View 1 (tube, rainbow, N blue to C red):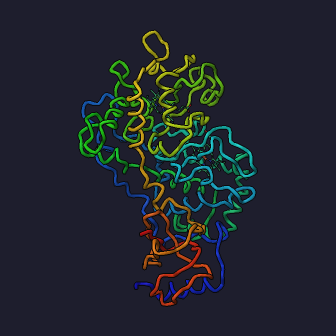
View 2: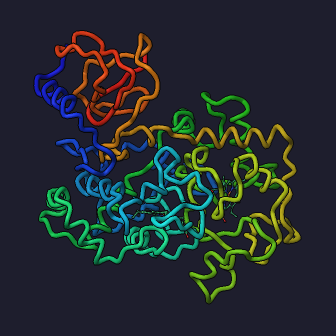
View 3: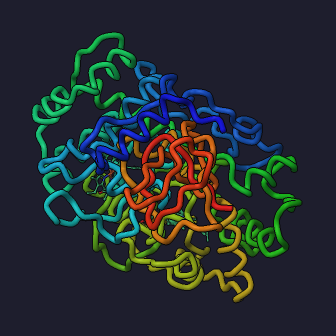
Length: 450
Ligand code: HEC
Ligand code: HEC
């Protein structure tokens, strides 16, 4: 049994004091050496353009990281704490993570998100994945923020989302003792400024990248996106063809807008994918009022982890990927600013006329872009102790891993120390499996399901 005396003592003292922390009453729990956010072990297909591809496939030249805000492990660590800190809202109830949840691809399953005071946002929340590879470096559906550093300060000041002024933000951050050391580590001294808050948050957001999906495993085995992937089913390979092929060649030309291996628009700017016949939301038209082509156009964000980010589109109008595919198949509207890529030779909206099998194949392909590591990786998780009440009884089907004190990720995605309710039968030497009705899992240990 590898339980250290220290852990044992603290475990027992927690038990007898009966204290269970709830979210945000406590300091963030962070590793002594920060997690690695800065090393990108990108597979070769991210950094090498496929031969003879008419469109760029690599992410070369698309990284929007500014020279004065390179990603560091300490910077992103501070960003992670800010991202999950509910104190940074007018009534201490909302953090960035409330509307950008890791398990939902850093988006929100609600069609519109709920702010600190119960109000709803004007649009559907956006995924944060692969933001760094949006070449134009502009943010929000309507691209109103010119940099990510600007964007991350907007939610704090939004009267529906978090309801603070930047002065209030600075003073709340300053009032929390745990921030000083994080600012020292990230920026060399303990000065807490809006500029540093923005930089650290932008670093954390840029650290959220996906390149270990089933798509990537297959892509690594072939020379270009086009050839069949050995690890795909026939259906998924068909879906991939439809995604990549031009419309005259029987495809959907999806890759023309959802480009590069990051599946995010490389640089064509906001597009109109034919959702409405007449403008219901001017989108980028408000941001670029002098050019009518931007009316009703929106940012094309990444399709990575799209399976997890429902509902879809800027207003969350589609609940499923099947509905999205049916939209492209038969529902494209002849709006005056409809993107030319979705019109035929006469300028009319395209009709893809996919068969039922083809539509299902396209959906199957989109699901190969799912990368569950983002929702289980502890470096993207909530650093504030947030107790997890284990529902169900502990019996022969469950046991406590002997490495209580190790913050490694358990198979079911829980990491944290185990505190045991008073009704448990515990052997203080931990030579026997505790028997109890309820387990509360918090930081620094592991519950493993056999
Ligand atoms: C109350 C919900 C809510 C909160 C809180 C919130 N967001 Fe958002 N976020 C949204 C919505 C909704 C959008 C899209 C709004 C739009 O485009 O008009 C969005 C968009 C974004 C985008 C743009 C992504 C892109 O690709 O353009 C980023 C980045 C982002 N949020 C980061 C954050 C950060 C960082 C915080 C915390 C400081 C935060 N959000 C807090 C709801 C929220
Ligand atoms: C002309 C450019 C263009 C083409 C071609 C295109 N898309 Fe899109 N796509 C967009 C834009 C722009 C959005 C966001 C629109 C909005 O919300 O108003 C989008 C949104 C999506 C979304 C939802 C994203 C989210 O986060 O909610 C999915 C899924 C999607 N597209 C899949 C596809 C598929 C599959 C194809 C091919 C059949 C395709 N797209 C072709 C531009 C395009």
